[in-house]
Image (tube, rainbow, N blue to C red; front, side, top):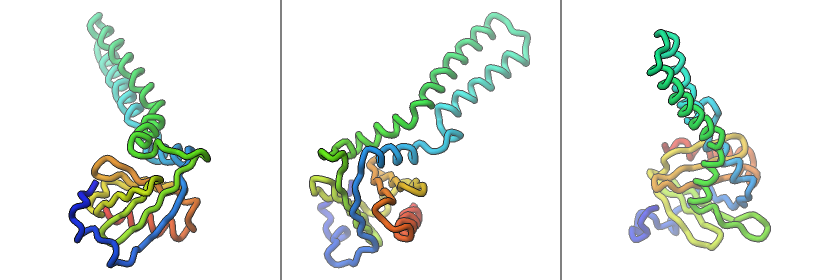
Length: 184
């Protein structure tokens, strides 16, 4: 997170914001955000490593006459592939845990948390449910992933901003996502 002692570069009182978004984050929003972070199954690292290991195993066992050493190697690779496959099947849960560990663990009695994001040309100001402001320079935006329902902004300090579309119009959501993606 940006050091708040540099008040000149993060002073928001002088500028007009590009976007001001107030939104609720619920458990279903977090699950959708975890799905966005996990990405498609074809890019799931657990499944990719598992497929590569299985391909190596088949190549080694088919290209040579299978000796005891190669069979042992094949069994070890098959066990590793199974471990990576299990990791791949839990990849979305791993992403959900990452989100919860980075500020999305708190929910009120209704199962939602109220948040606000104010976007300026050169900074993002996020307000959490307790009213604490976090200020980020736009250069701290590391990655933006989105689908038609949720946008997840990953920050350089490993933090996240989750923006559900349900609290915005389609055009506003599209414009906000386009602006955030342009920051990378």
